Length: 289
Image (cartoon, rainbow, N blue to C red; front, top):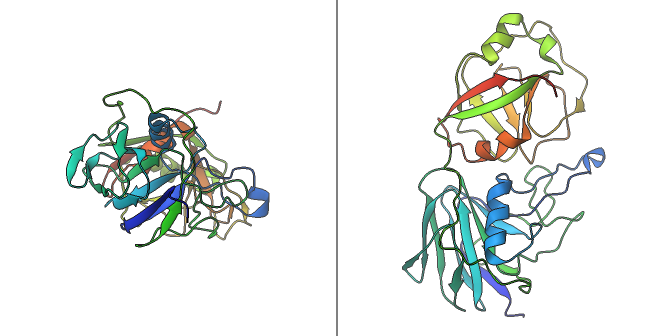
């Protein structure tokens, strides 16, 4: 077996392989998937000298522990956390050399939800439909990491960045989501539409890579019955029968029958990926471009 590999010592609550995702396959019923906090994933790739499309690890809340079989450069970013190599503290948000056989420990997030780990050469699992991303909805791509798994690594192509620490945005204390109304806002009462963009919500603990669920005031419909299934897009705010909005994230279904009251701007979704349960949320209506 090649020495360019990474052994998983501690997989954590949910650690998956992610890259830029597999957009363009919605007509086949395949979600786009990919890193939820795409800017954080791109940054750690740059720090280790990997291209933007290289696959990284996305951890959820409690990190992971890894042991490379050969010397590698790693960078950890996204949700801030403590990082050690064989028990010795090393920088978060900077390239770090890890010797062969050393234990890289990515601790639980101090704030935020998702931490990203890039390894020089990238995670080289087998691609599916052009992507190495794990898709929790469809099951495409590699399964979530388990203790004892071994991940193949590519060969480094560029030297790592020469920086002390790369600045990264802090996880949101309050999540402000700009939302374009429609296409099915007419399925809700005028009071519900006003409530949606004037009342506060909070991130629900039931949130996941498929959608950011909201706790807060229920939105009352103006029409009974259900829609025929129609196409869904990243950032769509779907309202199920309980009346509480769900913001669709990277693993969202490609079709759905619940009405969509608005669509969140794509630029606001990386912050949504780092919003812990209980984070206050405000939806702000913006005009269609």
